Length: 209
Image 1 (cartoon, rainbow, N blue to C red):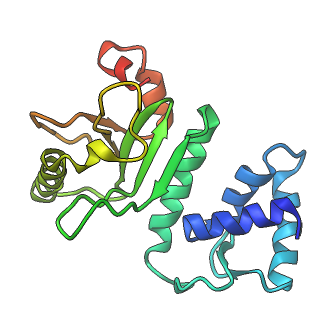
Image 2 (image 1 turned 30 degrees about the vertical axis):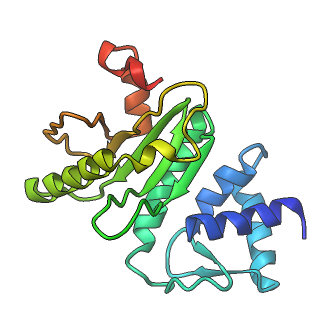
């Protein structure tokens, strides 16, 4: 099996599922015709039993052959949103860490969609495809505040060795701009990565570089 084949399969495990366009962009972006090249490789990997696909979706959505995710699962859109966010990040700079649905502790701890270190800064990412109520947002903030004060994050393996520990920004990707307030948490809100990049010259966003 070729190195690119293995990388595609590894990403299908990591992201749970990916569309043809996700795979073309991430793994064939340096080629003259990424879509055509991706189609050829994905067809071969399906034929050889290494991957599976939901062919009812356009473009096709791919899974590792032994993935337990139902090919019609409602969570597919959620995981594709995470891949889409990753694709946006790498257009500017590849993250040094990108953990999907990290387990931060027992029930009641925050459940971010991803934890990433990007441009040298740690973020908990919340990707919201629909508008949340004030009550739900308040509950999310309360979970993060509780996690902050428990201080287990100070001893995470990703913390810098040469300076004091830092709590990640909470970056909310949403069409809605929420009114958020906390005495200990730092928030970033944007509709996309590109929108945040456009705002990084303003004083309140310089810290996220």
